[in-house]
Structure formats: structure tokens, C-alpha cells
Image (cartoon, rainbow, N blue to C red; front, side):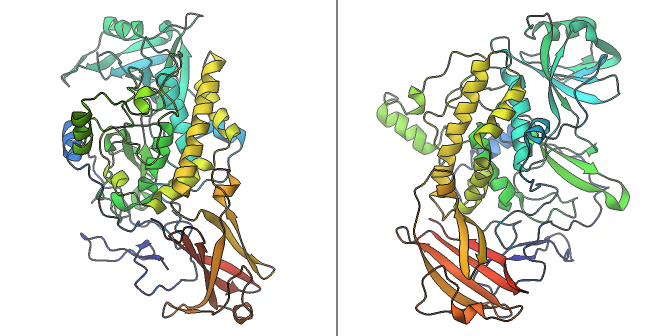
Length: 537
């Protein structure tokens, strides 16, 4: 069975006790009293961590040349059940209420006037700027393209709410309805030109930015205001390697299940700009309590939005630079044979942009350019991500979409229905790769579980064979119990003493590659689940 083992960082000469990662099943596995761990113990101060940056052009070129799927490697950062424990990367949130879904990470509320503009990032087509509100809080402000009012601002808000509910760290994003006179210019405000050079900002430049913002019927302008991430900002994280200045960052990012499985959530939301530059690390706490917290940012290119325009239908289907196979296919067919996504039709709803479930294949969805963690995603990683997606009920989805504050109810209806359809496609695709069995418990002398494919109605019910065994925790050896194939715990195991271990392997009778092995430990009068391992194609 897999378990969490101590993980040694190459650049350090000591072992961080208690921080652990998965090792191959071939090595004898021994369960500890605290397995499965629920939270990663993070020790060591990160107060001296330095800010880092990612060169966008280099990142694009470097990763675009590495588009081939790599040989499968075991995922790390998981406990003995194959789940991701709570950490500075991810939090296992309980089922959220409607009010909690609407709130998400938002605890401070939107900006309060007056709004002091302190900086603008560009004079381009889709300018953004930074404000300090009446309480002294800093918000990053983005606008909608004039051709698609409500599209990009709603995408940023909805994307943050969905990913927060799924367990990730995100900023507080708000829809801001304001009047032009609410914005004042700081005497020290600067504007960054397309060349990257900063200049002193004047009122006419601010007016030019505000002129590009679509105007609501009551004369107000609509913006998206994202509260600056708390703590000292130290730049984005990469989807590979580790931060050398973070004593808690012991697992290569492309091996983390919470980053690999993120590909499934991004595919669901069609968040194609999945690059390291759209993240932010911050230092929370001071002195010996200083920890680095990892955030996801910038969701304005999600759903049918590409921030400044409606999303190109090709995005999510192919990388910006086509792979050799895609180039060969187009050369052979002379580009005359359209794919399913090229035949997709989109609604005439500017606030939606180009978003559909037609032609959406969860198994082949792609970000704008290769993401190293996504390329290494295994079926087990994808299953973990798919469980997060399927946990959103129809009502949950609509609750969050309503936070986009669309003027036209048809927009809310369309996006919600499209997300529901894409959700079910994800469940069907990835649940087919493994045995989607969860909630294992021994009660009344029998093994009980939930078949997620059946529960969510995306797969037909499967029948499983049962292979029971006793497990020696010290040696990691298992001893099969012969001639037993039912959900009833064999008599030879039912009478086991306190601290004994037993297990069962369930095999799909029609798809033998789909198996789940579970291990239980006798704790008092009940059996506690301590280990789960899945096989897949």
C-alpha cells in the first residue's frame, strides 16, 4: 500500500520529520498510528524568502517545446488514502452552504469610496489599475471589453468562488459598480506603458482608461476589484521544482496531486491561461511563525472569456503552438476536415463569450501552452480532481454563477447549464478510468462503500469481486484468505485482535484494470480505514 514517507530536500542535510510523500507499493509499507494524516505539519520559518518572478516570454517558449506527455510517475503530497491533506496549498473544505458558496474567500467586502488610483498597468486595449479604497485597502481593478460587457469581470469572480469551494487559496474578487467621480488620482500614481517603462500618471490617462469601460444603464461603470493577497507578496510559484527558500516546500510541484488534479478543474471552468505567472505566493505571519501560502490568481480568461475578447474556440482544444501531430493532421487534411469543436455553435450572448459543452473532451482539454504538472497528471490524479468537480450540485453551480451579477437571466441559465453538462462529462470520463468507489466502512460484518459513478448518474453500476487478506503492518506482507469472494468479512478476520490489520481488493468483473485495495486497522470495536490504493489504465 502507499503511505506518506519522510521526504528529504536535496539542498538540505536534514529530514523534516512528519512531512511525507508517497513511495511505490513495492517497498514494505507500515501504517503509523496517525495515518491517514489530515494536515501536513509545516515547520521552519520562511520569513527570509525573497520575491521571485517569471519571465512570461521565456516561460512560454520553454514549456511550449515540452508538450509531450511524460511517463507516469507516482503522485506525492498525499496520505495513505490517496487524498491531499490540508496544507499551505490546499484545504479540504466541508460541504459549503449556499451562503458560504456565495461568500467564498471574501471577508472584507468590496472597495469603499473614495477610490484613490495609485497605479495603472497598461495603456493598452484592456487596461487595469490599482486603487486604495476609503479604508486603505488595496484592490486590483480589471475591466470588461467594450464588445462583451460583464464577461471578463464575472469570469474573475466566478472562477475564484469555484476554486475556493474546491479547496484552493484565491483572492477576494468583487463586482464593483461605481461612478467615474468616485475615482481620484494619487499625486504619486504611475502608469506602465506597453514597453514596461513607468511614467507619472495624469488625469487624462485615467479618463482614457475609464472611457473604455462599458457603462451601465444608470450611468455607473462595472469593474472587477480583487483585494490584494494578504501578507508580504513574494511572486508566483512554478508548476515544477520547489522554492529553495521555503523550508516547507519539499515536493516538486509537478509531482503534487493538488496541482496535477487542478487540470481537471481548469478544464471544467475552461481556464486556459494555466501558467505560473497567474499565481502568487505570500508570507503569512512573522518570525518563526512565517509561512508561505500559495494562491491562484487571474480567472478572467475562464468560461467563454479571454479577458479582452471572447475566447477563441481553439483555446482549450489545442496549444497556441500546435503539436507535431496536430500540424500533420492539418497538412494531410488540408484543414478541410473540421473537428467537433470547430462545428460548435455559441449563444448570441455577449456576456457569455464563447463557452459550450459541445466538443468538450475532458481527456484532451489543453491550456494555452503546456503546464508541467498537468502533463504528468495520472488517472488517479484526474480522479481526485474529478471528485472535486462532481461534488458541485446543480444548485451549487447556479449559486456561484449568480454571483457574476448578470443583467440578463438567460446568461446565468446558459452558463450554469453548460457547467453542469461539462461536469457530467468530466465524471463520466475520469470515473471510467478507475473504480470510483469511496466511503469504505465495515459495519455489521460487511464492507460498505459508495459507487460515485452510480451516485452521480454518470456510469452504470459495476459488479466487483472481493479478495480478502490479512496484513502484517511490520513487514508489509499480506496473506490472502482463500475461497472468499463477498462483501462479508471472513470469520478468520472478523475475530482479529486490537491493532490487527486486514484488507480487501475489489476488482471490476468486466474491467479487470479497475481495482481498489483498502486496508483497515482494528481500533476497539470497529475497523478504521487507513489505506486505499487504486489501479487504472
